[in-house]
Length: 339
Image (cartoon, rainbow, N blue to C red; front, side):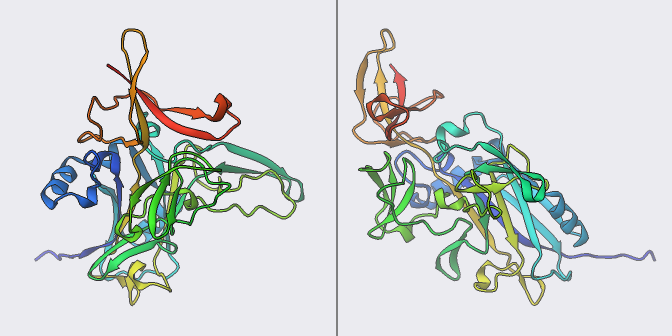
């Protein structure tokens, strides 16, 4: 009889990339929909239509050494390994997020932020450092959980901050008196819209503080405040970086392993992308005159209609600056709908 080898694979972890433009239903947030409606939306959802996930070369080698596999799915991606393989506590799995949908910046919050590449020569080392502004880094070492086991949700975004009355800009998310709010204009004197009266009842969306503070070499000036160093195999078109460490010493719920091997029930991490809010302006399709404008910012959604009239199509959003001066604060974001 021929020898047969059976290798039992287990999921090491899964990451779900959930975008609320595709999952919300008009005004109603995905999480607040009835289960049958959520399931129906998830059946047609495919994050691969707007974002690509690639493991870094170091992570490819790590997965290979563990005899594991990486797979991108309609909901995100996962890594699986043989159930008996030993995984070092400090093993790190890094993944580059790259946007593939040309319309992504139109329907996604936080895409107004500058993502320029800054190159700086550092004389003490005779080398050029390359930074990219406002690139978020998501990690299971700094993520936030909501709920209590067994009904716990593990988010890779860091805690949402309280508001700053001077520096926050339009679309920033904040915690205010226990509520989750999103700015609809820039500080000072910003307006906002409540997303949830109890922040812990809402998802932890990707937000401004997910981009880490940059700590440049001693004496270097001109670096962006937040972003990443473009080193190793991080491409210039990177949108975000996910880093998953095998062992979270402070919170075992975020760990991938127990006793050095994959857990029997793998952790499922979530990244939630917030759909954009904008004022909907209705223009006469013949002469371009303004017919009406929504009284509050409305969400962009693929399903349902947050307004009472025609909803936005593929047109770009526009920004209204104070006194129409691009150097001033942003007063509102709007979209034009011709009817």
